[in-house]
Length: 388
Ligand SMILES: Cc1ncc(COP(=O)(O)O)c(C=O)c1O
Image 1 (tube, rainbow, N blue to C red):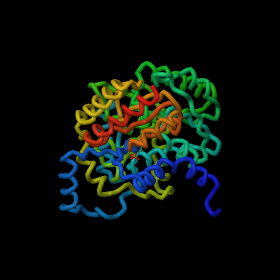
Image 2: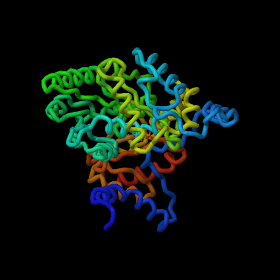
Image 3: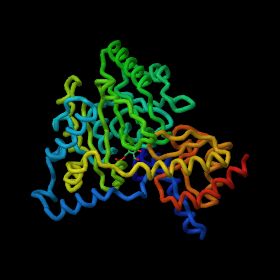
């Protein structure tokens, strides 16, 4: 075998969900309702298309060339101004590096901070790419369970902190649970990170994965992590707020009051280069410069969340109403893979919780057409009736 052992193991661990879809569409004439990927079917806001047309028609100098490695100053200035207003801290372009999506941001951050063997804590259930991203850069991924209701278990986190801990990744609103961590729990986490950092003579970074920061429901206010913990590094993305994941645009940002903030920002520019991203997509850098604060209509998602949640509840599913992001995470009355396979027979495709660090659950991405959700409901009911 020519490919590496690690990659072979990764292929085997994660390719089955995609294969299952192929098999169904080949062998079975039934319609499929695919809720596996957080790939939004709600179109980008009209303003996105306006700015896209403007950028193409005006064709500013260098539109199709590399940008400076950290991104165009205008894009970084625009992002820094937004961050300054939102987080009440003095961000400048110097603290911001434009990236190839949130995934690019996470990778350049991990590459910039990890020495071989350094540990990074992730909270389960989790975004399934974290362990791969950490391993990409020589880190060791340690998983800590959240509580039964998906709130932070700060004692469990503190118990895993050691002199080898380099960072913890915090994703709120959370994929896959939809949970938003409370201000009190984040403050208590920050206190423990500070205490342990002091004891070990190290800095423990909090990498805030803000992929869903703008997708919140019922007018909930997100606690401001930057105000709570100084050693925070932000991995942000326009994929979800603007419904443009295929355009691959995001950014990393360093807390302006962190010690050595500029050295870390320089490191992020360097890792953006040596990981081969070079510069974030330049057309998109131009577009997002003029789309600060713009996002998809949240009412569209909230309507889907409520419709789907109410239907599943009435069928006997046990689940929490997500406070943010766009996933439902119900319990399964039997093994999650068995339940998922029965749903697949009805053409309903979901992810088993066991592939996301918590078995006995399903992840259902509801960023899909309303019609798809409606048509899938009899399948969800039938399978629950089978096992109840
Ligand atoms: C929790 C989380 N983080 C990061 C990402 C990466 O997003 P992107 O690279 O499209 O910005 C995703 C994508 O689904 C995600 O769910």
